[in-house]
Length: 385
Image (tube, rainbow, N blue to C red; front, side, top):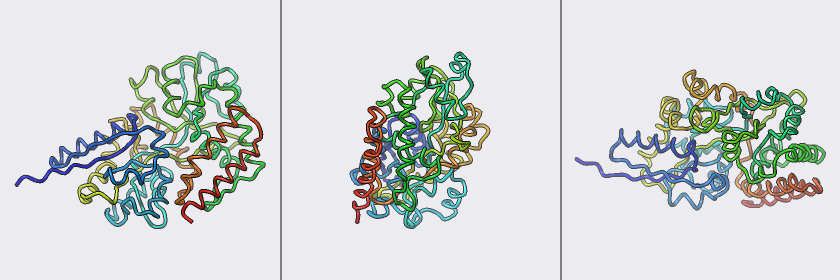
């Protein structure tokens, strides 16, 4: 008897890493389950970061999300609590093979809302040919970074969300996580110091960076010949693969400040299922298919994905094909700072980068920036009070 055709719809973001990888797993899943069609749709990276998932869950069965949504998901019940629908041994394997805190980042108040199919944090990247031409080695310290920036060879993403993540990074690196137990915890003296450090670095970069996200940086770095190094941007292994762009980028750990390597802010993506989905049995099968170690090391990676399963990061074959991207950056993932995930946090994240970016562009009073951030924090805590 012919099975009824099941059509599922998913939403991800519009880069090879985010889109082609899940289209490939959907196609293979269809070949294994011919009655299942999975249609993936895409949105911009900015929409991925800040577009409300409550506006997506009625339209899409599958959602690729950022982990700060975990608190909202637990509070609202919009995403399927996977601990109630997936095998315990599967989730145990995911936990045991987490890249840094990628797997636990999707859990909040006992509710696990997504599978960590993709892992990322800001890392360093460079053009080896251009560093050689400049006669310099890979920067190892903050002072090395500033020296290279004075040569006009450095770029970093400068849109609000990325400047905020870099603010988090420098706070955490220098002894104080910006949030502790979901409470804003940046001392004024450290906050001022971090803003001044970022402004000094930004002043040595071309102003075009203030319109750039990480993808924009990598496109410029791999296609132009005036930029040799990016000190921190969410990593994209695609650019370390032969033939992906005009010039190959290599990736490395970040510089050290006072002997401590920068502790950047964990990113990556999770595969979630809407509670509005009408076909939970087959949808959970697809989710586990995409996140299992075999798929992560093969179809997912082969199609431009950046796996979330640790076995792929440690695979010699995977690393051989991307110039050791995963091997070289794994230490940064393992020490990365985990953002808050309380239900109202996204209000803070969506707005706090604006005053940071404005300060990097124009200067003025850094204490006013910190005061605005504190105000936004209090607003965020009131969102679901």
